[in-house]
Image 1: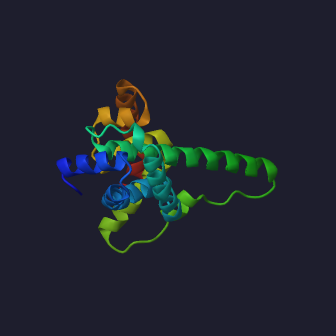
Image 2: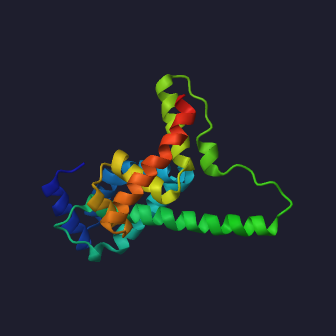
Length: 189
């Protein structure tokens, strides 16, 4: 990751159309964004597609970026919104599929399939169980937990990214934790 001053210089150059600056920022944030999106979506294919879409959106909207502000929050916000867009689309498609084929059994979702792999070490097992528990949470709760604990964003930054008021973020965080406790109890008792 570039330091804060060189990152600001890269952002200024990117805003003015420098493709090399954009590529440098993309290289710096591509893996963390992919990891963030994989956690939200539950599978690698969607994460890869959304990572590409995130950086396309970043470049298209580069003129709206304020170079003096950290680019990290801007990129994560774009990625999160892209993921929510795809989740809404998938939900509509799934609902349409269920309506069209009421006599067919609905198989497990991609999210559930992503967490079914058996792991040999206790650390991997705990991680898998945590991922399963997170996958059972509503999307907005799961996303807030991931942004806070895995990505290290403060409540205010999460509010900026999601467009929700700060008090709503705090309420969602409290409810997410409360919802997660019984789910984790199932795995760890």
